[in-house]
Length: 455
Image 1 (cartoon, rainbow, N blue to C red):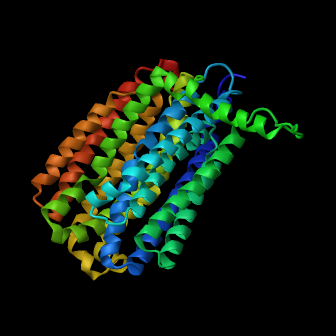
Image 2: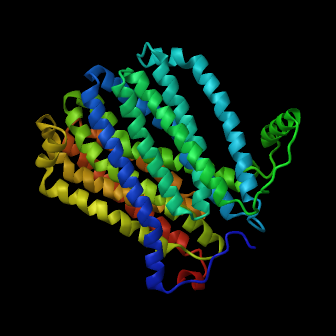
């Protein structure tokens, strides 16, 4: 069986229905998961004192920093499987070997966190290292989780992937609020993040292993001595380091992962630099601007989730000599629904929305809502195009993203702490970047044969 063989092309209308059926559940899961995050934010804001809530946000930032390489790992797994030679029977074995290698690396990372956690926590102004240890290890678990999510994406098992996203959102909501309500404070809430990620990673490992299992397991297992079982377990775990066609043995994939790290780091800067600069330039306005920012930037998280459908589709189609512009159109169509809703609220009801969702104290930055919402619509579309380009192996666009990140930093600094000016500067950079992304997409598309362009 050829690797990831494509079924014959369906008629265009049916293909659109299939695409929406694949991308729709991911978008729904992303919106529900983000809704759970908003619920957790509102509940914990009332449950914790102001100082502890600020400390929790600091720890959440640590989680996102540590977990940043996970999305790059996901890109590497999808690219590796889409380029798999021969048959797919060994993909599950390869995935298990990569997962064991990642689990061993996670154990080493967790040990280093426990050893150095107290010192790092003091640098962050925290006297109790437990919270830092918990969220840092949780970030490492999320990176390992991305191996299995990449396997699910490469298998095009989008409904199961959506279920895993819902498991993560539900586990975080229950564990973080439950541990906080138990009076365990910031450290307890951070431990809730770790428990939630462990549950999500376990679920992902089970469903990814089931998705790629080609041969049925024997119904009867011969009884072995305990020593033989232990020896076999040690052999399998240590064998992960022997590089049996493993993740790091493919130079192309290593370059893809490096490009993905650069691209996703630049996107993180483009998404958050305005809030960071506002916090430094105008601390009194930063809180109101943060309310506008949280409302607008939820769209970017939805885009990253929907890109879980686009990435494997682009990688597999490109390997077969075809483009995936239809899949890109489907993903953008799914994203358009929350984008139109966001822009509509920002244009028609900015002050009412902010005062209702947050409080009247946060309406002073309402003038920045519409331009920032438009900026995040542009960034979300750029995220889609970026994941498409990463899927087809284009690395040139990473330089444009890095340049845009530098330009955005300079632009928002020149706004001198004005909320509306900051949002307008951000909008200008994001719109220009989207134009560059469309240009790069056209350039890459011209590399395909004429017959493939029409496909």
